[in-house]
Amino acid sequence: MFLVRDWQQRIIPYLIDFDLLKRRIKSFCTFLFFISCLWGYGQFPTGYSVSIDQDPITAGNEGAISFTFAAAEIGASYLYSFNSSGGGTSVTGGGTIVSATDQITGIDLSGLVDGTVTLIVTLTNGFGTGAAAIDTATKATAVPTGYSISIDQDPITAANEGAISFTFAGAEVGATYSYGFNSSGGGTTITGGGTIVSATDQITGIDLSGLVDGTVTLSVTLTNGNGTGSVATDTATKASAVPTGYSVSIDQDPIIAANEGAISFTFAAAEVGATYNYSFSSSGGGTPVTGSGTIVSATDQITDIDLSGLVDGTVTLSVTLTNGNGTGTAATDTATKASAVPTGYSVSIDQDPIIAANEGAISFTFAAAEVGATYNYSFSSSGGGTPVTGSGTIVSATDQITDIELSGLVDGTDT
Image (cartoon, rainbow, N blue to C red; front, side, top):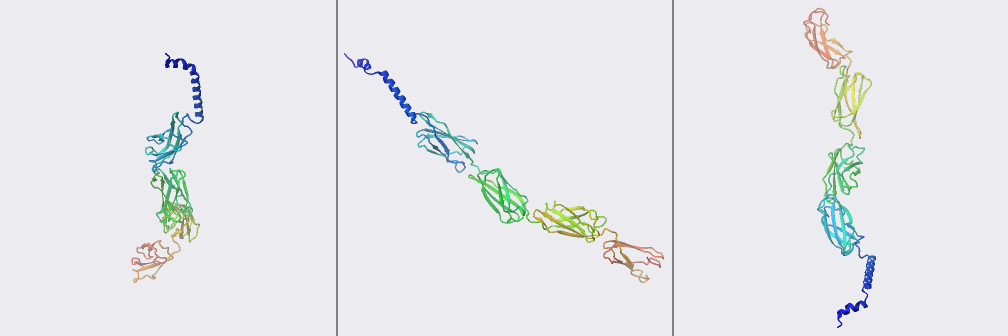
């Protein structure tokens, strides 16, 4: 009996060459694989890139970060990771590409510390995983801190008040600055603002002529996308006027032989830091004595001035103060110089003869006496008796000295 099994084992092999069929199928598969490679099939994803959509990452957006693909392979799986140079826990996720320019949204990076944030993304298909695509952004979620400012001109004078500047230290690049100048003396506050270009920006060309002299205070804040930092301040003195309101007084009056080599004078309300120039001259003549220096205190005393070269007379002191704005009005004072011993005076007894009726009230009168000088007198008689003496101070050049009792002198020529 002829069975089907006999047909399969004996007849079919003679009709079909199975080895040839296997070789042809293998060649056809190799051809298909080659064609698929030419068409881009049969390899892992390549040519894609990613970009973080928010830069910088701030307190305002850190909870909803996104990134976008370019040339992503549709149907591939993606894996991403965000990390920061400042630290914090990496944020990861994944999914499947729907379009070549997929945007992946709603990513919370609040757990990353401020710093450079790096995004790493890979795509994977049936053939494997492509090379990582990378992008970076800056995370800065804090308000500006650590900055300071300094006014570049101190004092502020008439010569520089129209072009004042100040300089930052530690400023946050890209932050917005706002400033205000005001003075303890009054005037309209001067304000301005702009954007920080470098950490040590200098802000120039500020006109403070509208502020009254006094202590000038500069207040500055920096603001970024997260808010406004603390106020930074600095102060300077504004003194745009020439010195005013000062006076001087000669400390010795009269100027005499005993003190003329060490004369001094004292200021009142002098401007500290100003330069003083002084001159002593005399109505009697002689070479003026001059000098200069710098005011240390409002009541400076200038000492050890030698006026021996001035002739006796009315000595006049003239002093000016000068600051960066100019020279103030001269302050003056006078004193009398009388350094010679008294000369040229005379006296006359007012009663002659001296008799019993007037001997108890004798007087004498000066002519050309030096006011302020001390007088000493003595009456004596050729007839004898105890001399009568006395002393006092000249009040006027023609002082009369009265009520002198000469009854103790014996008659004779009284001297």
